[in-house]
Picture 1 (cartoon, rainbow, N blue to C red):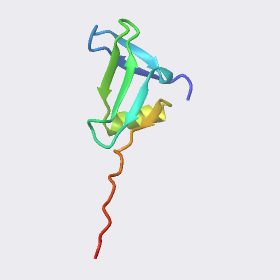
Picture 2 (picture 1 turned 90 degrees about the vertical axis):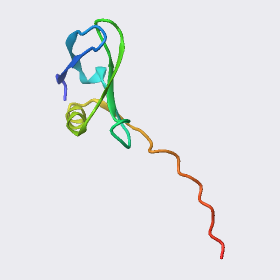
Picture 3 (picture 1 turned 180 degrees about the vertical axis):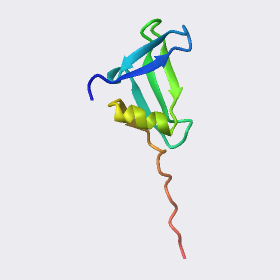
Picture 4 (picture 1 turned 120 degrees about the vertical axis):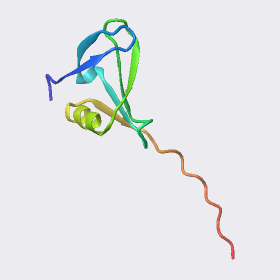
Length: 83
């Protein structure tokens, strides 16, 4: 999907702008705390990270934003059961 633009705002400098899909990154984790999108503000060069709910994830994914699926955590070794 070329030509898709997303409206965004920077919490640091309060600028509002549009970003192409290539300027955004989406990380999907195992919880709301670990699911977010990020970008660099074109006005002040700050790294911005914002939470992404289900609707945001859907819109960004459809728009072609690169997605990283975060691991839920390393599996814990299990102790064998002895009878």
